[in-house]
Length: 52
Image (cartoon, rainbow, N blue to C red; front, side):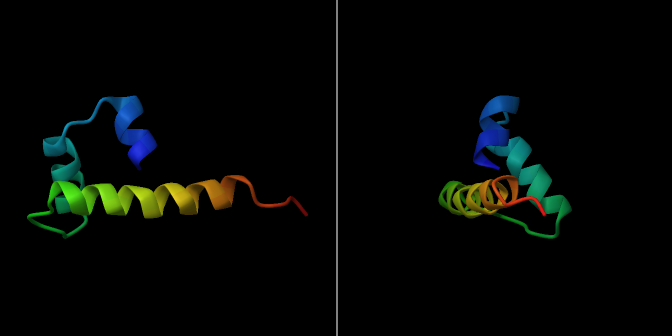
């Protein structure tokens, strides 16, 4: 997510709007950052998984 937000040039308001659509309201900058780290790691693991 962090990569996505940087590439897309998203502001905190846009991220806040996105997570609000997921049912999360009033998220802080630090929460967005932490969530981004977790999601980036999960996306990297998925992208680097071995093919069968």
